[in-house]
Length: 324
Image (cartoon, rainbow, N blue to C red; front, side):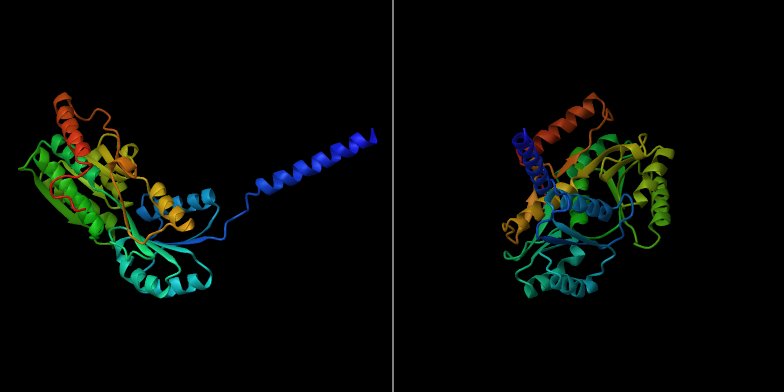
């Protein structure tokens, strides 16, 4: 009986040891990621989505994550130098405004991996980029043209980066695919006091009889969607499905899976397969998508939209004038 008791005690000890060794939630791999954000992590912003995604990735992959917001290009050199001293392994910059200083940092620290979320061809060594095709912006433009009764649509964005330009150009191309005569009004907001400026711009759109607006201006976009609902104007959102913000206004949204995009880059760097090139994802990679239309198109319009969608799929997401 004593022998049996001793065996049971041993089993309990072994089980306890096994559990503690496999379920240790505090364990982390010796791998660290630095995420540089050019803006603040306010709600509805791209930087907030990126920060949340990277923190989640840190828990999933059990790696160390450092997020820094409001980073100016002139600060990158010092920030990276300090991070390298703390054994950082992978540096990710959100936005093409950080490309130039990161290029210099990549040359100085060849053993560290670097990435920018945006358009950059890469140095084919340690600095590359993460981006996506603009196919779904083309589709969103086609929806805008199908719903516009005035033949006038607009876009409201808050930066002039290459990626944003390509997205707006794709939106315009998609709209012209439906209506070659459609008129487009584009506004780039100043970074200062964007809330008031955004509403002033929307009022100007209204005076021009613009009846569909593509909205990509972070937190100010919330105000625009709600204003549009009150003024019987349609909108198209960006980043997330914006439908809940203003169900009467939002036709659809171009959705970007920031978690999947950043997770890919982090995993590649972590396992030593980061090639320092441009990783650009297409329609079938599920990085970008178009939110469901929820019956906003009539039967005839749906037929036109589905025809354009099939054309895109057949061309692997490419359309006339697309920048690859």
